[in-house]
Amino acid sequence: MNISRRDLLKLTAAGVVGGSASGWFGLLADRAARAASQGTKHKSCILLWMAGGPAQSHTWDLKPGSEYKAISTAVPGIQISEYLPKVAKQMQQMTLLRSMKTGDGNHRTATYLMHTGFRQGSGGGLVHPSLGAMVASELGKPDLELPNYVSVGNAMGPGYLGPKYAPLVVNDFERGLPDLRPFSGQSEVDDRATLVDELDKAFLNDYGATSTKAHQASMQKALQLMHSDKTSAFELSNEKSSTRDAYGKSRFGQGCLLARRLVEVGVPFIEVSLGGWDTHQGAGQRVKALSEQLDPGFATLVSDLKDRGLLDNTLVICMGEFGRSPKAGSQHYARAWTSVLAGGGLKTGQVVGSTDGSGADVKDRPITSADFMATVCKSLGIDYTKEYVARGNRPMHKVDKNAKPVTQVF
Image 1: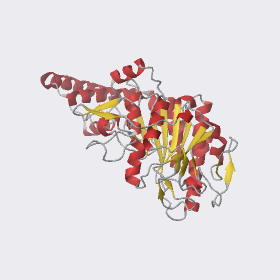
Image 2: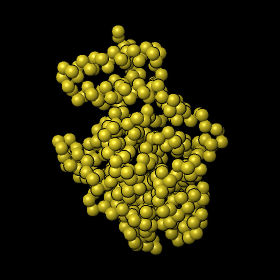
Image 3: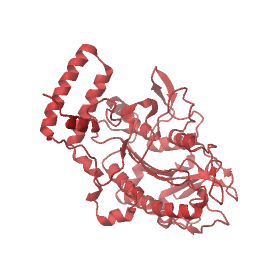
Image 4: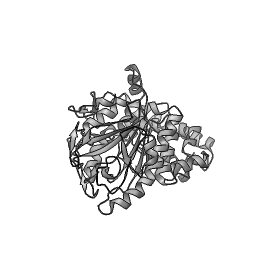
């Protein structure tokens, strides 16, 4: 029996053909069992990635003389930009980390730094795993039909953890997950997949190839996905129009809605990207337009998770790779900037750290990228002090050994 080219392409898209074609299958059951034995809570994390570096002077840390007006929030004493009014109402669920100090003002290397906690090139020839891959490997559920790491837009990969922890990238919200329904009918694909599995077993008996085992696991997971009704989580058309409107009709807003739906069905990590924050000129107008996308998406996501009883077990992060120069918000600035945490069972409704009167430098509690990563890991129940074992039995730190979690949020 021959598998048609059309079905081969569909199986490849679903991760059935090619052990490395899909990075979101084949999670190891022993890792989940080990996490359970250590009492790890299976939480979820949503990263709202503000690509380009949002100007803290126009969002989270306004100073006297700013071209924006600062408005009060639901927490007395905390003020943010006038163009984030919906987020301001959710401030009780959030913590502003106003003392980020990372020192890397290059987009590429700072993006790597804030996704991994390590400087690019510090892995001794190895690429560090992104936060999404780390969460997928630590908290991913082997029996979940859906991928454990989903990205709306581009995202960093799994590094030395391997392709099974790479993200499923989603760009078209109106099509759900395309190519999962075979052209020739599900029963025929099942029959053909059974034949492929038998051939794999025969090859495995003869040669014992590790790649064949990975291929078998991928095929089984893909078929499970093709039969699963949980793929409906990707069908945003099933939501009421009023709900979709509340998140905002932008790609980012709808990505936030998708993130909530994926958390509901057990996906542990989702990243949603909003680009355009590289405001070298005209930050005032550009940040206003971006804030009008961020505001409904972020605020509705937090309130929706809370209303559904999901916020305590879901950490929502909003950040970019660095901030912008004080007041003008024009140049790259990594000496003093802000990231935001929401939910996750943390102590929220507060500000941690502060900057001086002009916003030019951190005044108290500087937070490094490693400190930030350790804080995120601790909030998710990941033991950041333990090491990974990379290829060649090489031990690798999950988080820099000098990292100090932000104790104020616990």
